[in-house]
Length: 155
Ligand SMILES: [Zn+2]
Image (cartoon, rainbow, N blue to C red; front, side):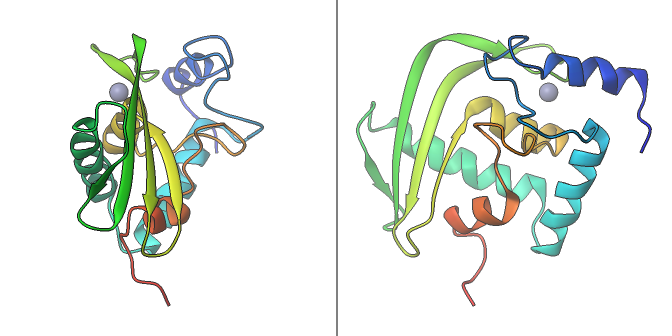
């Protein structure tokens, strides 16, 4: 689908070296609008919303911070470790404000699923429904993410 000039500028901010070294698009050749639409459909298919996904990510991050770099167990079934790095990152969607360079590792002990995300990922999901492009190091496939976050029941 054709996208606006505004989206082209945002997509440029996601290329390697613009905001992050590896960029946020991986090997995905789709335009940004199509990436967002496909993940939006997937999140709805899972019976979730971007807000509910982001809320769980934020809850686990907030609880994990208590560990000051060590793993903490949250809600009796998540092992969470939060690592902070120096520096801050801007949102590629050109919002005001900067996001801590913070890496959150989650292991869902109930099903063995893992995920790793950043503070910027939480914001981009909540604010923009953006889970990064296919092949990006921080791509968060919605179904795999939801499984690691314990947001849907195993069948
Ligand atoms: Zn933003």
